[in-house]
Amino acid sequence: MCRTLAAFPTTCLERAKEFKTRLGILLHKSELGSDAGSVGKFEWGSKHSKERNFSEDVLGWKESFDLLLSSKNGVAAFHTFLKTEFSEENLEFWLACEEFKKIRSATKLASQAHRIFEEFIRSEAPKEVNIDHETRELTRTNLQAAMATCFDVAQGKTRALMEKDSYPRFLKSPAYRDLAAQASAASASPSTSRPAEPLHT
Image 1 (cartoon, one colour):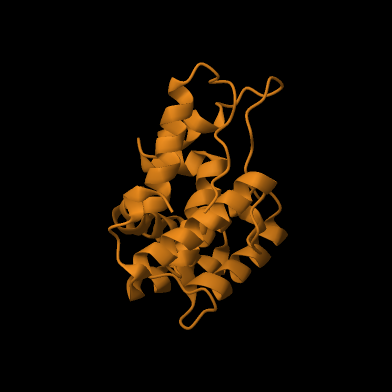
Image 2: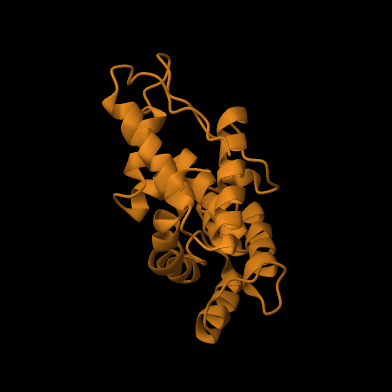
């Protein structure tokens, strides 16, 4: 364990170790080991890709929540962090809404709308997100004529909650700070074309 984590309480160290271990596995395998397929995979920059290299990607996550959500690597890392806090349902709902907006078939739009509502919105849903009663009822009403925008209010409130609450904790987590330090070191080194090495605990 790196010295920067030495002063943290045991519980914090255990959670940070778990987060770092999982990130290390993700970086090594270049995939997200969860049942949330919509979260996507880690992607390495290469000469065949126009994406920023991984080190630049990691450092960009702290610039804004928008940059984090626009990065497949960032979404995967953030999802891993949220799982350690047992609050991954917020991100999974946000991602489900993003995919929902891409649907063009009216029939599929209606069926997916009900699936998302049952999974995330209704009271006592398996992955119930933290929204107020008015927003829940507004979303229920929107389902009567499902459109690509029917989850916009609920999605916006969930996003705002993550940006205000979970995102700052993610940036302050020992695991992310350690990862960012490695990324900074990699960016400053002559071999900037190489991605940051996977974390090992």
